[in-house]
Length: 320
Image 1 (cartoon, helix red, strand yellow):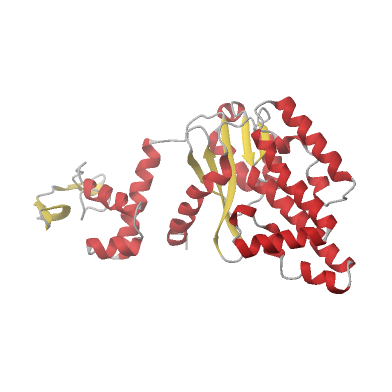
Image 2 (cartoon, rainbow, N blue to C red):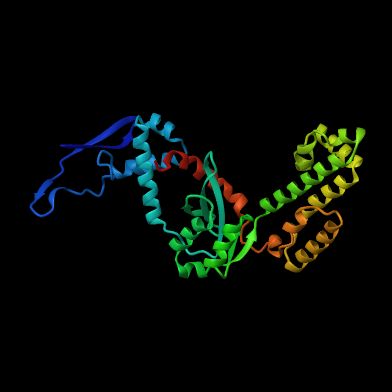
């Protein structure tokens, strides 16, 4: 007599008892009867395994184990089987727009690559052993040549190995740098101006710059009253920092344009105002793909919600 745990009812734990035929075959050896309503682990029914997998999407493995009174390794195994079944039912779809990003799964610069379908707004591939060109090429190999040819837009950060892999395997795709990483480079350039100004000025003028790094790099709407007063005093005391700050803030208008011609004109005017300031970001901003806004969704920075969820679960399921 075999026993398998099933879904609870009325607050009671339910276990099913049933007979399972065991056959001794002279050619194949001893074989057990296959029952489609049982999970891969025969101690649980398939619907109970799906129930545990659904709980793991909302709760941690530890919480699910405590709630269902299971060992945490059993919960992990059922969750893995549930995710494998979901992948079987929902294979990688053909899409015209992808987003590429990497996440750190542990300390020590160990990364995994996440590729998202921007049209359906969900991740479709997670793998690799770092963030090298060969890691992203593993996705394109699994995706297939025909579907790679149909990719029209690839949104990513400015990491060169990702660009090279995309150009090699998806030649029809237009590479678009996402807004988050572009603004991060502008913040780095503004911080470089702040450091150079602190080294250039002397005397009491330094006190306006010292200790105001995060005040200068934060969005004005995120500052409290004291932070806004400190920012106003800093910009009034140093003309170069004021100019660099205005250039950085005005660049955000680029994503408000709906026509490429107007966006290109704004970008060229912005660069002309940047040249005389000699900011380090001028070299990074020289690529016209940097300001392209034709992707269907504002992607990778929004997709980080998916990536962080995957990263939290990956820490429990990393291979040993």
